[in-house]
Image (cartoon, rainbow, N blue to C red; front, side, top):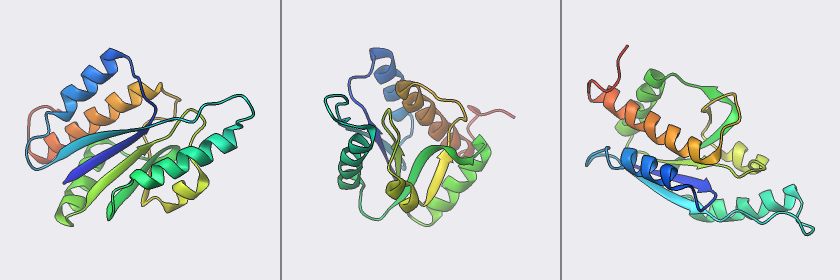
Length: 156
């Protein structure tokens, strides 16, 4: 399974890149986690949030891998526990599906992209810094895989 993480935003602090990379390389051979950064639209100078979201929408659509299950992070999405995420990953693995998970930009995502998603997923009901979301998502994906592999990383 290949998991593509599409994240609107570039130039994260070093700690974000290091933490994300640490989790991404833990997955092993069967699952890979790949980050694709999407250039955010510059704001100001007549660029409204709506125009910015539309420009980012086009970039995101172009980067979504074909035939991947599309998961979009949204604060109004479905909240999973780590075990529920692992159960879903088990099903997606059995179905042979790759995943594409989208983290939106500062102004959010287009309604069209959200409606196209196979799953709207809530990482938190709180607003989180973009870099923190990358790290937390990578960790939770790794945790889900460790649950599936009966690895002691996750404890209940």
